[in-house]
Amino acid sequence: MLTQLTALTLLPAFCLSSLLRPRQIDTSAHCGQWDTVPAGSQYTVLLDQWGASGASSGSDCARLTSVNGNMVAWETNWTWTGGSGVKSFTNIQLDDGLNKQLSNIKSMPTTWDWSQATSGKIVADVAYDLFTASTPGGANANEIMIWLANFNAGPISSAYGADGQPVPVASNVQLAGQTWNLYSGSNGANNVFSFLPASGNAITSFSGDVNGFLKYLTTNEGLSTSQYLVTAQAGTEATSGTATLTTSKYSLSIN
Ligand SMILES: *[C@@H]1O[C@H](CO)[C@@H](O)[C@H](O)[C@H]1NC(C)=O
Image 1 (cartoon, rainbow, N blue to C red):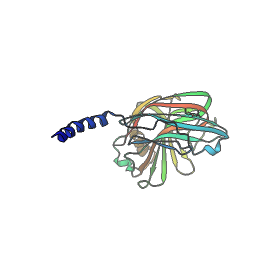
Image 2 (image 1 turned 90 degrees about the vertical axis):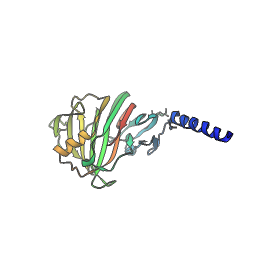
Image 3 (image 1 turned 120 degrees about the vertical axis):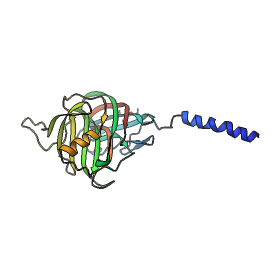
Image 4 (image 1 turned 90 degrees about the horizontal axis):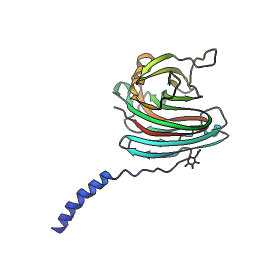
């Protein structure tokens, strides 16, 4: 009788405490070139310093701040000197719901609230970076970027004006409550579509449906609806300078 009672009273107490206890997360700083930090069951923070060898000096760290359901907070601090190319794309990667054909995606709701502290001039962007492929998990065929900010950087473009500025393939496109210019070009390996804020101003509080951008491209730019979405990341492509990017709220899911 006593053991039965104990079991009955302990079980609900245990369940309640495991529900109330926040998931244990690693909030320490990670600075390795390819470090990864699990962020709940849906996301991973990726260091991804793929162009670090192009820098004469520098480093880049990231740490997870909190995970609350599908809402995550994280930050990255970086400093890079030398070279003209991107050094790092430290990002939060979605691990859930990928490898769907574009024709089967109903929506991709997202929220991204961020702020950035810089010292001196920086060259960087703050952007979503998506890839599609011809097969689930296949080789990248198209890259789709949604830039929320352009700090002295520029999108890949197949056309440039006499002023040296990239020429958009579409201007003043209304999506997710914002106005965008769309650029298109090749990075040598795949097509790249880049949506940039038409105003040139940073969008520091963004929410909307990322699928709207994919639909725009399948309707207007020949992106095939039979492509599979294989990667969905959001972070900062850092070329030079010193900055700390703080994401206070981020979520993305694929329905
Ligand atoms: C970033 O922050 C970490 C942890 O506070 C620190 O160890 C590192 O030196 C910083 N790196 C840069 C590039 O500011």
